[in-house]
Length: 193
Image (cartoon, rainbow, N blue to C red; front, side):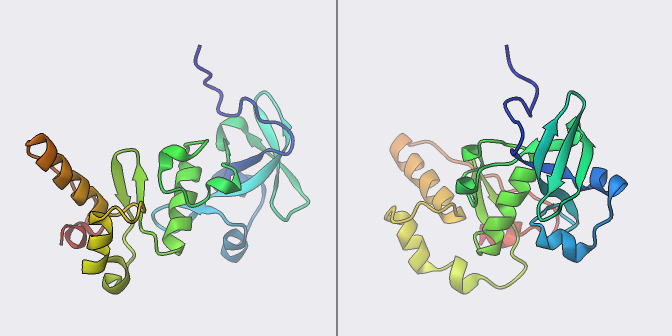
């Protein structure tokens, strides 16, 4: 049978993510405190999840200690999510994460974004995060195209997707289609250039 309890196998000392909404019911944290904790943020840049350590894993609630705090807070079990080990930070492919949940995905994308790695794979899908700055000199260019054409780099990139589609078209003699989707201002036009 498939285990539906996301916290199964975790125990005292396990690293987890906790919903900030639930924490705010019990504690108040300033925005600067939230950013220093390494929280995962949503699309509006608001803190959604804070890293914590399990103290007691109960049937309906979990007692957690936020990083760098001494206070223990009780949170409903469904607002606690397992965190990935540090060796999976900045994973190129979200399918490599041990725990594929919203806070882990957000954190991985944020960590990559902070290193100017705006492309991340999610299996066969390429996820792009708009850098909201000019990256034409570092993220795009003929030299980078050549690297992907020669298979010299495995880093996720729109060029890698295009080169693969072209190779499949030539090998299989079948048309290929690329779908570029996103919200207004997400960078679709820049990606297709």
